[in-house]
Amino acid sequence: MKHWITSTVLALVLPLTLSAHAAGLAAPSDLPDLEQARAAIEQDPAVNQARHAVQAATHTAGMLAASPYEWTASTTAQRRRIDGAGNGSGSSNEWSVQLERTLRIGGKAALDRDLGDAGLQQARAQLGAARNESARLLLDLWLDWLTARQTREVLLEQLQFAQANVKAVETRRKAGDASMLERNVAQGDLAEVQRQVSATAAAESKAHAALRVRFPQLPLQARALSEPTPLDRDEAQWRAQIAAGSDLLRTARQALRKAELTAARTRADRLPDPTVGVFTASEAFRSERVVGLSLSFPLGGRYRDQSAREALSQVEVARASLERQSRDLDVQIATQVSDAVSGFERWQLAEQSAGVARDSARLTQRAFSLGEADLQALLMVRRQSMDAVNAAVAARADALRARYKLLIDARLLWNLAGVD
Image (cartoon, rainbow, N blue to C red; front, top):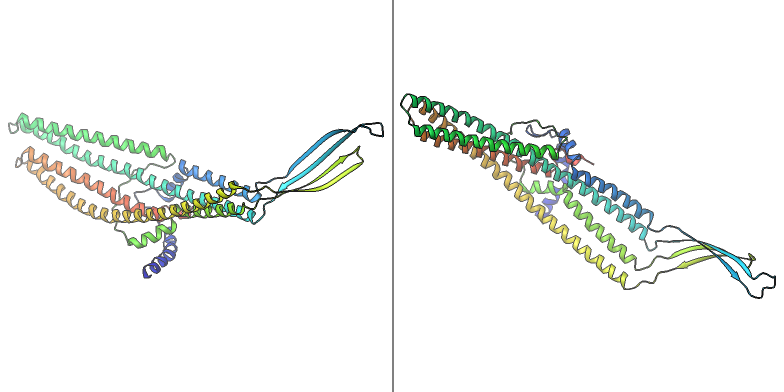
């Protein structure tokens, strides 16, 4: 009970405080700013598709509010022949005109209006979910590009070392202090570093192209990856904040509401809607004028009964879907919080390892230039340094990615909560 009360309070209070904070939260320095990101997200094809779905749902709601029934006008004309007519003419030109319409009874008009509103709210929630997914995709593509770019810069630095080593070995070989084998080893190391530079350049180009094609309105200004920071909230707070603003949950809730209204509408359909009309006719040589009312009722059968049962089953399907979506969201949040916490720790360890490896490589490089270390030792230490630095870049990107995704889902990054 205490846990339920605490979660409820968090769900009510945190969205207000954190959303207010979100309005003034600037984007991190390594990400596109608010205006750039919002413009790119709004033009994403998935968001455009969801926006058109909202427009369609608006028209659907208008249709349901207006009623599926319309006035029907009908007319007939006939020529009647009467044998033995005393007036010497056995033919009478006759006609009739009728106007009729089916009426919704039993509260069906109100149910239809509620159904239209539920469909519209569901479409709006799906639009919000599309924006959130687009923001997550933008983040992934952006970080993929920056990570590949920064990795290439690290390898370019290593390439300079490899080129310097080849020159040093050539100088020492001419002086008789290095063998042909050492020269071949140095050149092989240079070729390997060049291969890695080429591979990372291709990865950068690929990431750049994916970002440019999916978000063509986004200015692609390269920025250095910022330093990760630890989370300032615990898992319960993140869960309350994300669940309160989750458009996927809102979509599932509206789907359940729509299913319940559909079931109620189907139950109401067990009482058929009557059709009422007025008509007038001219008969018997235009000597008779007829004016009347008409009323007709469909006779319900097994079809209406089975339709009502099917609608009730769909309610349970929607209820189970909402429960599944809620649990999936809890698992996702727990996983993301764990990734963000462990990612920050891994980045710190990777940075420490990279710092030690850089120092070792610098000292070994100096010892090699003074003839105090052989080439094999230098290449081994420098390769360890390169791997450590690359691992630190990857760990930095992973830590930032995990934290930024939490901020997006919590509506704290790019202010997605402020989009209508």
